[in-house]
Image (cartoon, rainbow, N blue to C red; front, side, top):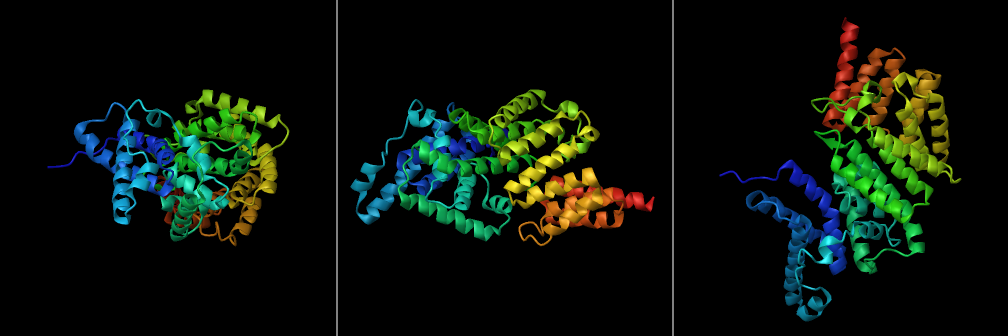
Length: 417
């Protein structure tokens, strides 16, 4: 007899609830690693029981109940072995919360977000831990976002969990001073979660709307907390202006549609208007940061009624400012495209040469894909075909691979014709 499995809606719900449940359990027990293990067991129980028994009326409450039970059972077993059950159980309340309990209804995700970005962690470790705990990304996905080996990222996350556990970090919203110290890492985490959702680094789907929704939700929460912070406002604007194109990015079969080929009537005008209002407000506050500049670039793309109407000179100027603030090779890659659109593909290709020696991007599929595109614009179809195929071999995203191979085949057919 076949065991029933979760439907897509239930899987999306579990992904959305996971950080909320983890936050609630961490608040109860104070042990991040133990809470994460207990929540994972609760998710496994849901995957087994919900298809058979039906989804509970309060899914979040159900998950917290199961996780707390699992955590309590583990603590009891460990304390019995170590002959200190009384002490442990006095520190961790074993009572299972009811569906009306605040531990169930209160969303602790924002507190968990700032906790993961605690000052006891390095910036890279804080970001990695938060992506794992809140973003729900796998270790492999996080490693790809950081352009490092998976084994390196696994060690980093493990050390971060241990550091949080031994530092005695309280589960509470940080003070004004602490919040300011952690904010940069918090924003970077939200940015990476959104990017992974907007263009998945692996798998059969181009996009993961669960991640983009969660990133936008959390960024809105941070914006409510810090409405006058121009970079928080800029990041929210960037997300909205980018996500506005989501419906036009894929075809009927989930195939990737490039920005220049998208049906712009499908873009969400409400999100664009909200995003443009936010970026205008943030730029008027004086200090300019990288998220504001990226939002301004996104707004210029969204304002163009046709691809050929895009204000590339202004985009190039903004990327020039952005490069002064960041050594991110992805920014340099985008800058090369802007150079090509303004000064010709040869100039863009020359800009790419500096990235070949950058170990973070030298073997990345995006570098080969951009080079292929610029070579095609330059009329060098032979090399463009080669680079499209190289890019296809390097990506782990099936829609991106299919798109790149299609571009190579299109040029090959044109050459033969």
